[in-house]
Length: 146
Image (cartoon, rainbow, N blue to C red; front, side):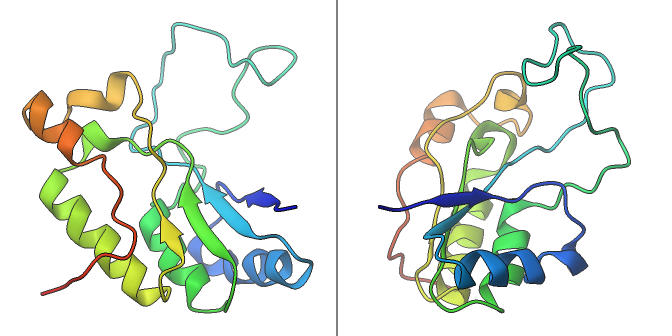
């Protein structure tokens, strides 16, 4: 049986310890969220708290999942990494492909991006819809980089 550990909203200098601990106790992977924007106003209640409020604010650290993966990959040996719901449409597809390929290299092949995209953050990079969809394919075992 395989278990994943979600790590979110940690400052970069505090990612190594929980990653090493997750690997030491037998988790098979770490899943990281992706969020590029903090919405000051939202149209719906947050579904995972009793009162519907979010438990983070604009000052809460939210490391980029690729940067966080590189940091945690440097201090672990076996545990794998992935994103839960990457915001593909908010990112330049060419730059994202290059970044993912390098994270694969830095982690020794232990990174695999998630496969969904999410709502409002979908169109903020200006890429054509057809191009954005193409960027969502698997990049595992990528050849790169330069």
